[in-house]
Length: 262
Image 1: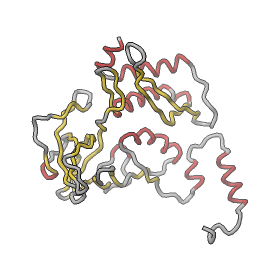
Image 2: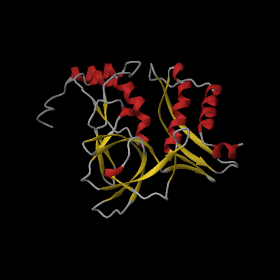
Image 3: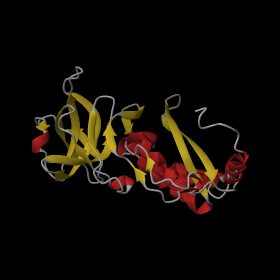
Image 4: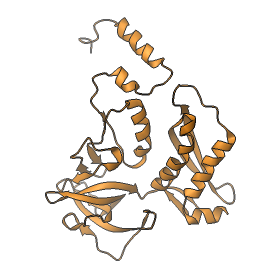
């Protein structure tokens, strides 16, 4: 680095400071890096909540998710890197692991039901277009028919290798009594609720949650990090508006949760 950073660059430092002092950071990435071509990012699972934030900071720069990876294995690659984040399909790599797929049913609202345990796993060559599956991997590292928890939809084929779109992650993030709310359930509920804040110029930058079982009935507690869209000031929150957000989240959860709450 000493060959590059030979001396202080006061003009560049002043330029960066001026950009960061703007009232709004919308499109700030383009201002800081004018030659930027795309943003390399992960858009599956819990990372999907940051897509809108990246679009805000990126100012129209393409979000590219080139590979579908996990700690268990590399699953597939994105052959159309300029696709919109929620339209991305990954072409599976048949030589990174031995893949099998458990058929998954979908209810009327598109929510994954329990895996059909009566069905035998389907191998990579026999998945059907438009069907939903939970991916199972066997690896050289020692995993044998390990269920990753990801639900995928078959969207097409490249040669004979299937292409999958990530739908949801089946692992449970919240649990109260007999109710279990998945990561996808929570994300969809919050995406609906935050629409109330957008006309007010308020952005949801990130969130966290936990299941509060100290009360009867139990409840889910959400922590939202909010900021103004056109400035870096903290938003002035209206209690009634935030209550509406809570109501929308409550109504978006499943029948089991709502019946226990009532």
